[in-house]
Image (cartoon, rainbow, N blue to C red; front, side, top):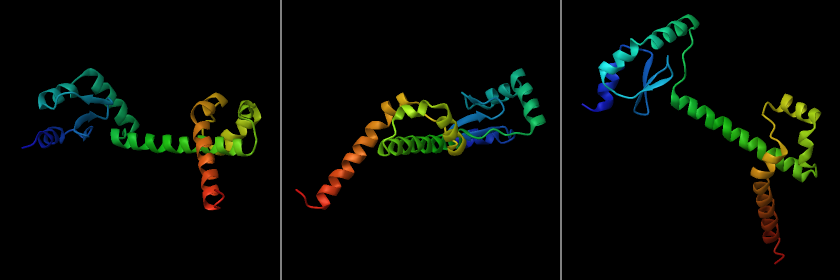
Length: 151
């Protein structure tokens, strides 16, 4: 019998435990249980902190998402935030709007209100996104020249 099957049988009576990526996760305490032995899982259930947190969770009725769901959610958020920063930088640069305009309070308020993203400061865009925008514009110019056979 594989180790994962043994562990899943040990945690079956406890709905607050889950197996995620081969690890035992206590959703009440937001902790990963180091050992897969039944005794240590039972010992964790009896700790004062687990009992107190379980009382809070049952009164609130909330369940914490698993590690993989949190990771997938964070990856999706970070990729959309990256796309937003790149698109914002491209829009400002191609419209001849200086990146320093991002420090204007009214402009920043407008962007935050309607874009629902954190607006990066000028320095962040210069450090992280301007090179990407520069290289993509340069590549589009090169493709335009090659396609028009000017060479």
